Figure 1 (cartoon, rainbow, N blue to C red):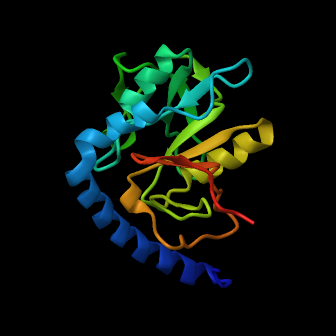
Figure 2: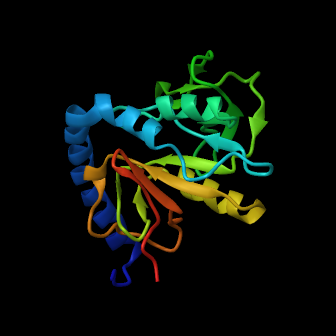
Length: 200
């Protein structure tokens, strides 16, 4: 169980964890990158598109992130409305635009592809969340920008949502350093399958 930490101690722990996680993810990507993306699609989601919960946001893979594009294509064929995130700026929640694999994109922040401004804006019901590391309790380690924590906090105040962390199985660690502002996941999804967090 994590002891209470000062903000400085927490930041340093996260910095070290990110450095280790980057290496672990890069290794997993080299070994499983080509097959893991299709394993995600084969597993699919434990949620069916239904009235009131049928919009899922994915993400375009950045550097060594596992790709959810085959999964998004499958979900679109099953009746989901699929979308991608758009970064607006520091300390600002993400917004989301409708996008289906194969459609046009434009370059966004860090040159990550995103839907054009003409694409409809939506509020997702299910978010596929990239991460550097995760633990069995459902805490994730991100890049430090806080975009998804801000976004999940905002959306959870508006409506029921499901946050599904996406990574290679090798990215699981014993404990992710976390604070009060870190939003936990509802599911963890790797090439080995999807599971719920173990929380008291």
